Length: 326
Image (cartoon, rainbow, N blue to C red; front, side, top):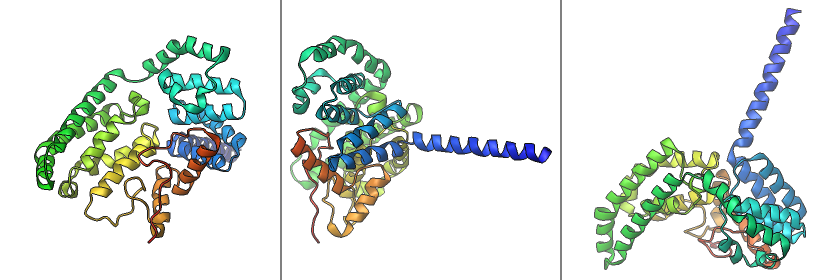
């Protein structure tokens, strides 16, 4: 009898451990991005009903979803003539930080901004936007915005330096000390609040630009830099917990690879076009951080053209990513 009790207890613990492990795996945002890539693959094959089903599953499971994904789901719903569902996604987008002026810029969505549903959206806008304002960390947002403005002013100084030597001297003597202060502030934020991206401050551009500037100071500086080496694994962790998008990280890391004296190192395909011979390595790098493959991105560009929808593909590269033949 004792043996049976112990067997039952062991069985119960095993089941509980299994459920806990699955829950932790599901909450990992690498799984989130993997599911979104699965939906995007269906979009590329014009299997829109199947794709929207995956978006619904993801949105129902995760408390925080990236605004871009919500906008794609809204457009898919309109495309499928599921207007009630589409307008519910529009409300979700506004609660995630989408402003009306940005909504009006979307050519595909503009045609649906009429009728009683749209009037309801405008009427509820302030209360929906308030949900966004109360979610984000406003002091952290103000701090990062101030850092971004300082960074832009400092980077602008390089434009007034004539010649490579003068620019490199400015980068080493002026920009590098400034950037080190910026990165120290980032490290403090990472330790105390997490990565300041869309989830924390409602902006995925400011801090990514600051780190990208740090990674592109000069070849000599990057070769000896230990700050980004310390920050990098913390950024990967930020992807896993939903604080950072894979695109932000890929762009930041590509800047380091582009600045490096070793140009043979495989990148993510944003700053330097991927080569055909190493395309599988590029796709493997991208998939490790939850970023869609080059082929899928290029396929989505075609679907954008055929449907008129906007999938908000990262626009550092306009349209398709070209592949160099070698």
